[in-house]
Length: 394
Image 1: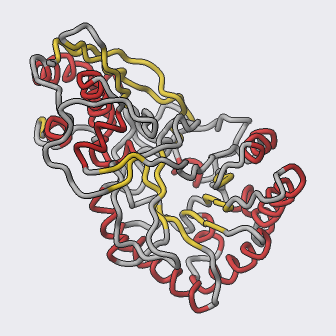
Image 2: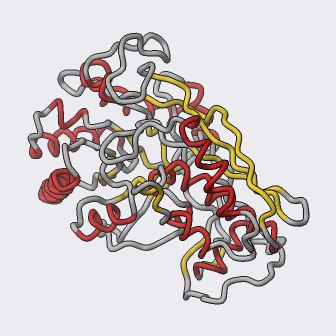
């Protein structure tokens, strides 16, 4: 099977881009919007709809493979590529990329995905959003060409087996939407609510009291409407606000996390992005120091790194340094979706290693994934349906 043509269309992404620098500078929310002037390059508003480019690959037999070029909410922050402005990339896609893809065989995914992901154009790599969306379409095309699921392509080419049991899901809920949290509790989501705590005074409280009260409220609601045996982990993303509140005092942050841990018992606590440092090296140092402080206190709080942990090299750097318990992997930040395959890292935790993954979608579409096993270099030449398989949508 070959790619007959490549078609591109600009549209809206599933969510929004948010200028974190402007919010940290004191912008005040008005509902979902933030009136005022943006700070970061490319933004017309502090919160604005994300743009997307839909990639459509027309195959020899008339089938069409799809992928979506999108970026993440906090684009341009902590080492990420700048705001994705779709219209700026159309000319390249409709000429250079189109000619690169037309006529190419698509029975296998891995090699052509690595070629696209590593492409240098005008002296630099493609925007991560482009690499993400184009390789999505290539993965879908390989599955169509082999008449199988995307999960089976990944399993065959990367030496993974298809998981037969559900994979734990992290549900991201708006903290103001109590019904959203209720729905996730009733569905027995394994990790929640993530939420968004971006300003100290508004979200955390000048004594940290607002975050503790919020966490207590989530636990109370689980007790009120959840099943008796339902024990989700409480995952809170604080976007660097604890570092701001405590002036970077690691011991003070560790003491506060002990209070927060007590507030969510009997649930386990995961705390994401307690600080957003100026560089990757500073972020690693701070996270490693907090893990040590938590261990000295005998606490079981686990910390999650997101900012400055974008690429596969970043993940390896945090893992090698023992700087976190979990890595929040946002798939568009990695570029090509070939970089998001399941991969064990040397990231030590109290119970081993852990990697959490996330995509820009707001709802999970599949609870099955591929698990790594011995490599199979040949990859699949044909696929047959498997009761354990399911399509994994980015």
